[in-house]
Image 1 (tube, rainbow, N blue to C red):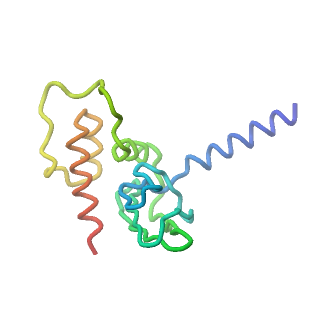
Image 2: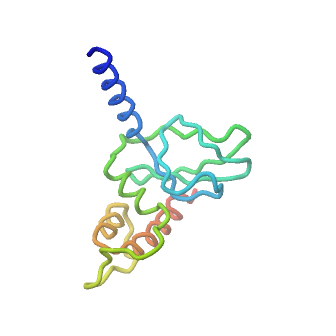
Length: 148
């Protein structure tokens, strides 16, 4: 009985650690680091020499990693992770599934992506069924945030 309880507690603890991601990869020049990958502060990402990955936190902050011989270390997150926002962001940046999609917006009008200037607005439009516009707006947002 003790082993069962201990095993359950260990599994629950590991599941909590797995859900504690700080960032989502939104762009990567390295094919082994795919958009939608969740990473945590301090984690080493296997970015090759000369490769880059753009990370976004739940708060919308953008960080650029540059690969090296030993990969790249994920920086410390500035704000506490929000698992719901990270999940929504992951869905938005992960490669779109192939084949037919169900639940696409068939009525109403999706907003112009250039009017979506905050992460909250982008995620709201995505959840409202305008995934293509949300992806375009997110690309523009990441480019703007990544400027020095």
